[in-house]
Image (cartoon, one colour):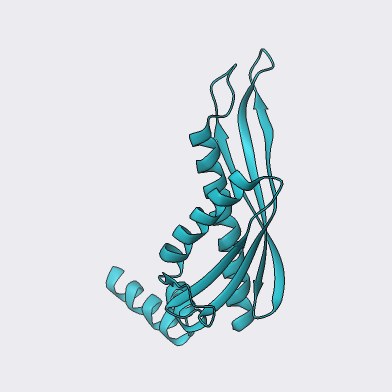
Length: 158
């Protein structure tokens, strides 16, 4: 019975024109991507973290290399907003969880779209956000914003 079910599922997926996201990424985005990250002059430290995160995300999600050649697939990514909002308090009123929110403006094919990514994380009561937690939260939220961009581009290309 399991074999029949698997065969039917594979047949339906094969006939439905299903294509994995990674294959669609390769057809839309080339092997090399030139990504220009516009640094926020009010908050340059976070922009540098985001630039590093975006370079890592491009390598992993697009399965592409970072190019220094502007003729490669070209993206301009601008940090619009980075914020941390408390989302949970303990019984004494101390913040124990935050949500990081990263808003990016992505220009691709001369069209700018805006994408937001969020990430929730905990901290110890009566303490502040450490630099490592701050960096990790920005990285995760940036990754989710880039995921939103990828999804929008793939849906638009179908």
